[in-house]
Length: 281
Image 1 (spheres, rainbow, N blue to C red):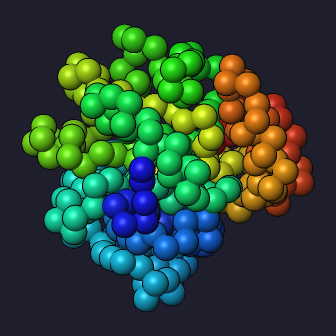
Image 2 (image 1 turned 60 degrees about the vertical axis):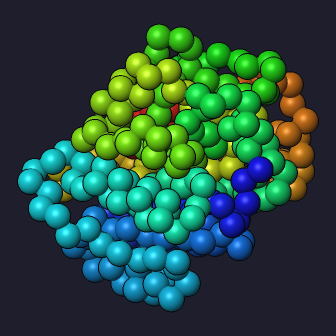
């Protein structure tokens, strides 16, 4: 079972401003008792920096990267992941929960969820990661009847790893793993070693709609919608959680079906028209 004693929650930050605050607030609210760390990749945005200082007293660890980014597409993200995995191991945690700053917990990461996710890790030594995000339409998901979960099919590198989710640290330590400089490279190499990530029956977290996006330290501009970075989801009500948890396993937990957007006016039209992938970037 996962517990607040053996899992470190770690938020990776860069220039997200108020979206970072939403992420931190939802993490504290939905994951009470868990240690939370923030590692910032040299944000220049004054709002982001002020938010980090605001929450610093409540964090287990709050640090910033110092390495030269050297024009890398994702800055120091993978060095930061490596650093935080090492820190978590040294501090005696068994798992690290990677959280991106454009994400929001929409329901509690409580004891039933901790037990559910822990059982997925216990089901097979090759389960490297449990990814508790809601799913997107347009992707092939394999339904695992025995463990009541989902994954990408055999031969798909995406089945092994993502930059979001709960990682088993003992597996990384045993491999002497050094993170590659892209998600796709990490996926490919870990898939070749036979490792898998599973999506649980009951997800708890998701990327917010239309976040700000950055590549190589530069913000990508988009005309629509106008208020990128300002949107979020409503927290799931008790009834919504119960209904989702009572559904049939074959009813895949797509985020559009189970999550209600908040703060949208005209942007709701754009949200309805674009693909799932486009709505989350």
